[in-house]
Amino acid sequence: MTFHVYNTLTKEKMPFEPMEAGVARVYNCGPTVYGRPHIGNYRSFLFADLLRRWLEYTGLEVRQVMNITDVGHLTDDDVADSGGDDKVEAQARREKKDPFEITRGYTAMFLQDMAALGVREPEARPKATEYIEEMVTMVEQLIASGHAYRVGGNVYFDVSTFPAYGRLSGNRVEDLVAGSRVEVNDEKRHPADFALWKSDPAHLMKWETPFGADGFPGWHIECSAMAKALLGDQIDIHTGGEDNVFPHHECEIAQSACANGVPLANVWMHAKFLQVDGGKMSKSIGNVYTLSDIEERGFEPRHLRFALLRGHYRTQINFTWPIMDEIRARLENLDEVAVMLHRILDGGPAAADAEAGRALLDSAIASFEGGMNDDLNAPVALAALESLRKPLLEGQVGAAVAADTLAFYGKANEVFGFIQVDKQTADAEIEALIEARNAAKAAKDWTAADAARNQLTAMGIELQDTPDGVVWRRR
RNA sequence: GGCGGCAUGGCCAAGUGGCUAAGGCGAUGGAUUGCAAAUCCAUUAUUCCCCGGUUCGAAUCCGGGUGCCGCCUCCA
Image (cartoon, rainbow, N blue to C red; front, side):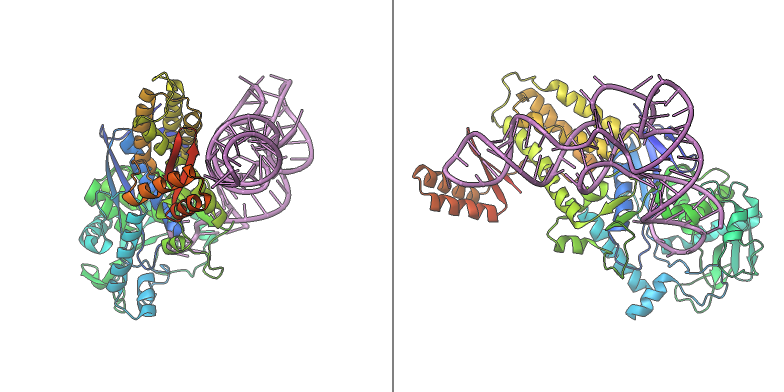
């Protein structure tokens, strides 16, 4: 089975076929760095990471680009004289800092969180401020080809020149006008036209361009320009959160297609929003969590990674603390699968027949790959990994199969990235305590034996007394 | 007002026309244990939000209702 992906543009699952054999070009819409990213943001970035890792698993070279938006989008595009109210500048005023300091600081925070969550570095993380020239070039092209028009220092895209506008989101231009709640902007020929470039002397982040001395880019042009600069006119997959569908991606599609003459992306994939406590997360409820909040509650970043990848990316999933507790328990069990496999490879008890369990492994692999190939069905793939545990506990796995299982488990974890697959080694202190307890047990000195065990428990070491002696694992 | 998504056991989460509705977490009883933990055995949805309909047959399709969520306005 080949990898099938759901394409928001066609509303269908289709086999994924990269334009260039063996290479997938992927662009992910990244964060606007005006604040600390929260667990909702993480979900869509983790989805992008999962996609990239699965493409790699299938043998493709992945050329992945995720932008960093360090120019604030306007909070209100329709008011021409918006007074420079953009999110980055608003935050800068709140913190009494230079807007460039703001974006630098939050970019660093974002990258730190991504690293902690085990997100692989994309090929490039372009910053919008470093591609102003490319944006200007694209805007000029759009003007020259009649898809955009200037009104003073402002430039707007003319949606009437792109009939497919609205296809991605299912919006019709007429409805957009009817549903518009914002003031009519007299400058625009059509209310649905969107800004490519704006000018405002009061703006702090501004650039001198052919459109004026005090300009800054519109909402959507940066992604079109950066995708083109780094991946080419046409790419395989473009991803983002579901909120990006409209207007952001709809506008990208229009301006890129009109500037480049080819469709921007063949496949558009969108991750659903994360809910918290069964609803929208909100600052007033106080459940807009960041990675630090997760860690303060005693969880590791990989627990959150698991929690956010546990559901299919196109279904809305919920985040609650009890769910995190469940995740912790599940992850301990997944870790233990690796522990048990290492134990067998080190000569521990295994099924007499070295090939025992082969069929179980084969079906787990088939189920894992089948799940992921079906539009990244992570729950099915995870179930396949969890199904490996029982045969191991029951001693149904032979030495040869254990070796192959461990190899597969490692590969599978290259995709999920939250399981402890490497062998857990004991240090001298742990060995000594285990020895001390064994000795105390032999002498029936239960107080001393329990003291040693409690000490190990405090160190996160769980002892398991088996008929073959004591074994341990980290918890 | 316009457009769209989702609703499966105590919890999480697959399944989208046909074997006994995956898998996990948890719970209860028993075994085991110096006591625990871990483990093993057994039990834990005759049923898939509600009401109709289509069909030999539906959790899966259609109509209506209810609830939650999203987009249309910055947002992953």
